[in-house]
Image (cartoon, rainbow, N blue to C red; front, side, top):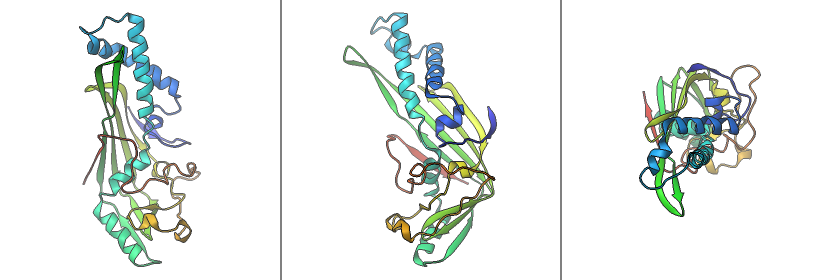
Length: 248
């Protein structure tokens, strides 16, 4: 599915994939997909005999945990990828070395790929019978984006286009949760405060940083403080098996 996305709240992978759907909607969709694929039944086949209702209960529990995996913040994912963008980090370092300076970096057409492999263990009677390995993959395709940097931090984004593709896969099989669509960068990264791109900038008192400018579509609503604004280079919590790739 391909479409344009405008979302009034924090843009997580779940919000991007399902829009205004609630967690209960996500769990229901995942439970149905797991039942259709027969993954749980295949995992316990020959080890334990479970009734249809028991298998459905297991599917629901796996879906509930999987729903929590979709809380991944798209803004933090993108910043983590941009921390590998040499032109951007070098410019941030120069602005930090020259207080009061500003650099405008035109980012070349590029792709940021973030892949995560969280897992869930299935235990029956206290014995582990299977480990379900998920893949949450997020791809950003960006074109014509201009970044404004001051004092080692990203303070504004201007123009350009951002297309996001997100997919949830279990054991190599897509779980009917995949979407591709254009998004407003002001929603992915609502710059209500600078996002540090250098290690030294992360230790600069916030009061000494310039106030950022939120640029985007008219009427864009900044997300609540502490959501995306806390993300910066070198910090991405709670995701074992996470990898980022940046390519032109």
